[in-house]
Length: 596
Image (cartoon, rainbow, N blue to C red; front, side, top):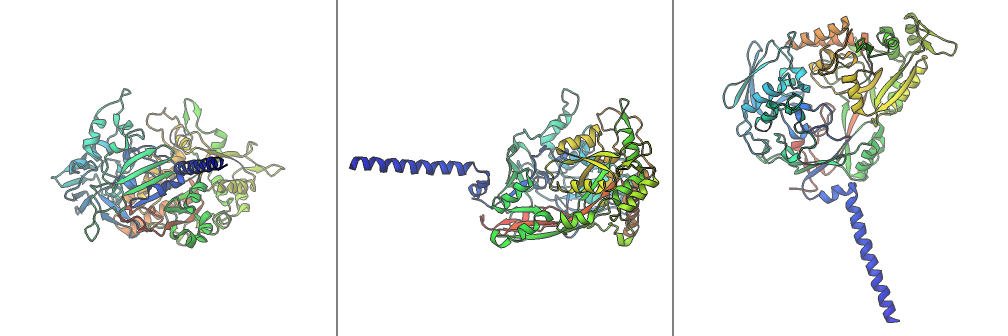
């Protein structure tokens, strides 16, 4: 009997131990526990909605991206003061004729591999990469200056000084170029620039993709890329050669590690933060009330960053061109889309205030301008900017006056009897999937049928940039302080003139591509604004661009949600502002739970 009891006890302990080790194994496989496992050094756990597309700064187009952690420019924009501050350059001077800018680099700058960062890197970055016509980088559009669209000249003066010589005065230069374009390492990238692939294109175009060993990526920002696991996370490690020090002389950044978890679902992102799996969550009005009630229990506080700086809109494809004899847009639809009265009727037909009241919980405001409300160049409705408050009857009148008509079922028809119906595409998994169904409902009230199409953002990018075969797009574009940063949208030659995109490089030509007079006018005003240094005159120029935009409606602007950031109480130094991200000052942020 005793032997039997002993065997039972032993077996019981075996099962207890087995259950214990199984529990440990299961906990180790749970991604939400990564924060606990890794919390041995000062760190920050964040989430991002998608994998990085490239580690090559010059080829990045998506947002958010890795560059805010890994690279810096000559200067830096402070979203709170709205002033430009020294970064890699400790100072600069401008010639009286505004055509020559001289930057002096800080002493002792180094790359993340310990090699010196010099004026040669600055010259290489611009002359060999950003100004290289064989390398179509995103910043290149902003370097075409003035009416001639000529590039600046970049020259080395000595070991610490570099000069930029402009073809004409260019007001945005300091903010958009010096403060907006990162410096890249010549010693790590020159060979890729000068070597061609088998297709004759520079090897640079396929250099530092996400399949590259992250530790081979050379950076100058506060963090290096330590590792990348597809669809899981990017881990950044403190750059020991970063230049910044605080007022007491202590090296920055303070955080040793950043864990950037890749979480596609917005709902999962919120759940992960609520369960303690991340430290900062940028959120919109939809989740504000839920999290506001949990601040004390969840050990976090919500910061209000003000209205979003980005612009939310719907836009129609106004391109009248043909490729290989085939119209990019159905000619019947193209006639509707290019009718100004039609676009204005759409604007009057959308109940934006109800969307704000219901979907945004009242935490937002209607949007009427392509320029961010935080910008000093923003023109408000009180200053005379045209608005399109909800008025379905006015919308119907505009349509009837433009030759449209209604059948007995209340459906809108064009003058030839074609039923007005188009497809609106939106990124699948977007944070506001309830908006487009409401737009669809509103437009049905004026007889228009909208077919919603939720597709991968990469496919949307391909359509608006390359194939150009789409009807309507619901999307958003990041804004900021300097209007000229949007020149690639408003210039007909711009690489993001989405509503009437020019033939992209390397794609088949487009026959019959037309640029309207109002498009040309806006483009010319953007150039005039970039040449003007008198702030009163400059504001008047950009005010006129906003008036034209609101009259002809290439973009039908919708609303500005308020932006919030929930920040764990153990994280200090976060200064959230809608112009910048919650980590724009990442080098100042501290983890008080895991002190160095």
